[in-house]
Structure formats: C-alpha cells, structure tokens
Length: 344
Image (cartoon, rainbow, N blue to C red; front, side):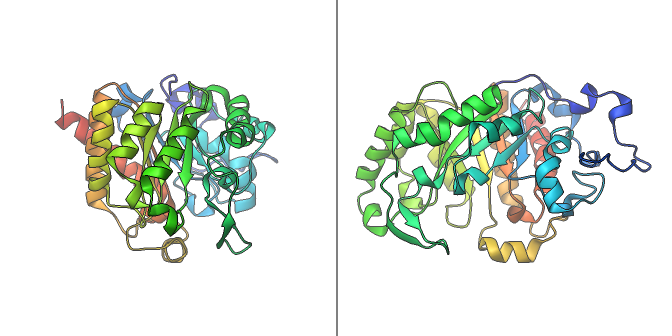
C-alpha cells in the first residue's frame, strides 16, 4: 500500500479551492466543493504516504460544512460526491461496502478510481457470496449453507480480479469480512481456520489482503499463525460483536511478533449498540454523540508506533462509531499527532 504524499489543498490551484466566504453553486453535474473546516495536523505531514484515513462511504447530506461545502441530496452525493470527498485535506481513503451485497464489475470499480487522485486508496469489502457461511433471505436472515463460502475461484472471478483491474494501485486493502458463523462451525474453530488458510493460500500474491471477523471465538493464536503463513493481515473490527480494542490489539501483537505488518482498522460501531439503534440516535451524523475516548487513545498510540516503525496505517470510520465519521477521524488525527510526538 504505497502512494505519493497526499496534500490535496497544495495540489490544487487557489482558483480551484472553495471560497470560504461563500462558494458559488456547483455547475450542473458537479458536486459541491469540499469544505476545509477539518484538516490534518501539520505534524502528520511526514507520514502522509503511510497514513490513510477515510469513512465507510461518502453520501451523507449531514456532512455539510464538514466534508461538503454545501448541502446536497444523498442521491447526488452518491453519484458525484466522491470527487469532492477525495480532495478533502483530512481524507485520502474511503471504504467501498456496496460490493458486499452484490459483486461489482471492473467497470464499476474503474468509475470510482477515475474520480480520485493517484495517492488515494480504497478499502474494498469482498462480496458476501464468498464470505458468508449461509445464504441470506430477503430480510437478511441466514438460511441454507452457502456453497461458495471461502471459494477461491469465486473470490477471484467476482472480487479480486475486477477490483484490481478496475482500481489498480488505488486498491489499498481487500477485506474479507466473515459474517457470524453457524454455531456448529464455531464448535470446531481449528477446522474452520484450516479452511480459511487453504482459501487464503490460493489468492494471488501482491495485494494487501485482510480478514475481519464477527465471531470473537475465532481470534486465536492459531488464526494469527494462519494469517502469518499466508501473508494476510488482521483487520481490527471495532464493533459491538467483537472484543474491545485492547483485547484485539493483544491478539495483533501475536501476529506482529511473527510477521510485522500494517495497522488496518474498521471503526464500525459503538459498543453496546446495534446499527439501527445507532443510526436513529446519531443521524444526521454531523456531531459526536458518544465519544469513545479509551478506544481513540489506544488506537492513536498503536497508529503512532506503527507509523514510526515505517509501516502503513489505514483507518476507516463509520458514523455509527461515535456519531460522525469525519469528526471521529479529525479527533483521531489530532490524537495520532500527539502520540507520535510523545513517542519520539
């Protein structure tokens, strides 16, 4: 995961930047320009090529004044907002979740890639076609066993190849988020981990792959050895279903002791909440409602140590983590700057 130092404000001419006293309305077919209220601390400039901060999507009208200079409907931001998002001084990454529900084509990935600078990176989730153990019905409930679960051929055809061909160097991290497994499978975690290892070993070498879990019982030394053996990374999932960050960091220590790697984090959901409850409580996602200071502090310290070791850090934040993903990343960037200063 490499790239040129990302400083979008410096890359753009003054005439391209939004007028802080009142930007003109966007031309037809263009998003509103990005807002510049949130910026990266200058102390993080030496790490710009290794520190990737982004949100799990970009189409939230409530981000007016945080990411976008003007209020626009969600439908327009979904189609046109990525270009403005990618010019924001705080952000140089974004998550693509839509492919989890239905595989995306090379052309769809390419359409995203053409809207962002060369230094920008995407964290892309694999389709549930490959990662889910069961087939979900229309309401999302699990049903029959999925015959393509951890099927390497399906993963290559429906995810890895179109993603890499469409995004190229901008494909930063390819994440296999494993949905909760059936209870019977969890009774034999060594057997499932062996199956995971066989799957991962068949993937083409080179891309940055990561595994994200929803079952705490799978976070074991055996899993970490399997990831190390296959050259795949562990993605910290800060989620109500998973252990708190301190316990996951201890598991990551075991992997780093064997094969030091990047720090990959999806800050998904506040502990004690489900997605629907968090959505209702936090909308329209323009302020921090439930700040998680312990998580922020531990994450900043680990990110600082990883950057100082010359390794990459990628953090993708969701609105459901604290109430507003841009503000979560703003506070985290400040905390990382403070932590790097304290560790040097």
